[in-house]
Length: 224
Image 1 (cartoon, rainbow, N blue to C red):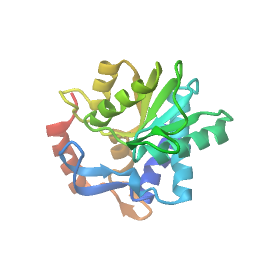
Image 2: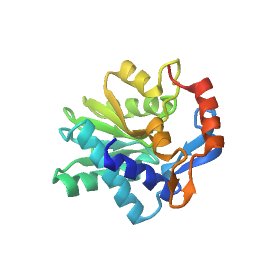
Image 3: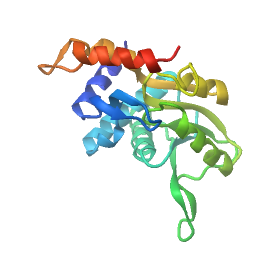
């Protein structure tokens, strides 16, 4: 596994973004692990996060696209931080765009923040985590309503590797349904491999008890 991926896993732990315990996902599933990018709260956090996304985007998609679209609300800082780091690391100017939850009818009117979207643009969507594909179904109509564009793919921080609407993973379902590539910075299997019973800063993040709970979760919700 690439060194930046290992460092990203540790970065999530350091920022308290990757947690283990009892949680409920947006899709209503009770889960023993949770990834919440809302806990990236400082400028240093966002610089690091943008760098990891930028490296993964360059590795998986390349930089031949025009707009980095981050759905409201968590996608807004993701698109901003990542477009800045793409500029810094690769000297490539990618515009960022996000949607408002409510259409603004005065001043800077419309549903978009950041760059407008125009005919012919290539758009890459950036999100934190996709569990059941719910958010992408809400996001695509917003993008498509703006102009005749090509959506080149979706980048997320972590592939939870669980069922979407059927037995396949949410990321696989999105790829099949919409016809564009979907990649994570890391998968949960990579997270487990890196942290299970291995001390990090004097602490075992995933011990036997947590690993057993994760295994039971995947028995029910793991993608086929």
